[in-house]
Every structure is written in structure tokens, then in C-alpha cells.
Image (cartoon, rainbow, N blue to C red; front, side, top):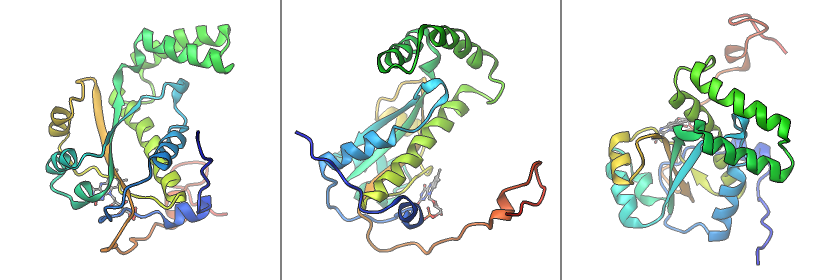
Length: 222
Ligand SMILES: Cc1cc2nc3c(=O)[nH]c(=O)nc-3n(C[C@H](O)[C@H](O)[C@H](O)COP(=O)(O)O)c2cc1C
């Protein structure tokens, strides 16, 4: 039996109140809530719906300590009740995998025979010519981080804090957690309930500093 979960914060509040938490209480995240956060997090979009993100869910203290050692001993990795090792799998261009995405789409009605053939033709070409990315790792990273963003916002809406982290040694994480060669570690994501010390909000640039009108560098005004 599943209980319907309701978020406690609205979208705007979740975005405004999410902070990168550097310290966590040891309280666990209820299983059902964790499941809901992960389920909603991977509703994130992806090119051709290929969903290249993969996550190792680390909850055992012994494994968190192992991961912390690969992450410059950052305390949040050892403290948070759940740490996700967020990965991108470069094998999503394999034909078997493409067929599995087509199959899923056909079952939900999102893909018909005609579009299936478009996918069979265009996806291998995308990875061969990669006109909009440098290499496949850049492409998988792009998508995985979108899912990570979804997870962080969804988690916050349920009162669960997070900390996206690039402070780790990828080769060490891969070896310690049996991550295949074709899979890259994009970030670590501790999840749980934040405690002090809280970091002061660092601010954000103004809209006109990061948005441009019509061409790069042109002043944008609302
Ligand atoms: C990809 C990425 C990597 C990050 N790596 C770390 C990290 O290794 N350790 C850490 O404490 N914070 C890390 N942060 C958190 C940032 O420092 C934080 O998001 C930024 O200072 C803005 O603060 P806020 O998220 O609380 O608004 C990272 C954030 C991102 C998006």
C-alpha cells in the first residue's frame, strides 16, 4: 500500500529556500519519502528520453565513510543519511538500449512506429557527429545534472536538504563503488535534514548580468 505524499513547500519557496547544506542531522529520511523524491527527480527531461542518469544510493555508514574519504573528507558525506553518487552512463547510444527506450515509449503511447524509426536513425548520428556537445561525457553530464536539480528541488519541497558536490576524486569513487568504465561520476548529492553551521547565502547576479537580449552580450531589459 502506498500513502500519497504531499510536499510541504511550494515550488517558489522550495527554490528560494534550497541551500547547499554543509552539515546534517542523523535523522533518516523515511523510505517512502525517499522513494517519492527519487521518482519525481527522474521525471527530468532528456534528449530522446534516453535518461542517461544512474545513481548509487549510499546509506550504510561504512560506505558513507568510504565515500567521504574519496571526497576530501567533507563532513556532509559522512553525516547525511543518504548520499547519491550521481552518474552518467555513456552506453545509452548502444542499439539495445535505444530499443529499450523505444519499447518504453511504445508502451506509454509516446512513441509510434514512425518515431521509433526516427530514433533508430537520429540517435546514433547524434553520438557520431555530436554537433552540440564536445563528447558523450559532456552530454551525459548535462542530463544527469538536470535530474540532480530536479531531485534537489523536489527534496526541498518535502523539507529534505541537499548539497551538490564536485569535491571528490572520480577515479577513487569509481573504484570503491564498482562503477563501470563507461559510466562517469557527475556529482555527489548528500540528502537529509540540515543543521548548523549554515553557510551564509552567497547571492546571485542580477538578471541583466546573466541574460542577454537577442545576441550574446546585448543588454536585456524586462
Ligand atoms: C556542481 C556543484 C558542485 C559543488 N561542489 C561542492 C562541494 O564539493 N562541496 C560543497 O560544500 N559545496 C559544493 N557545492 C555547493 C556550492 O558551493 C553552492 O551551491 C553555492 O555556493 C551556492 O550556495 P547555495 O546552493 O546554498 O545557494 C557545489 C555546487 C554545485 C552546483
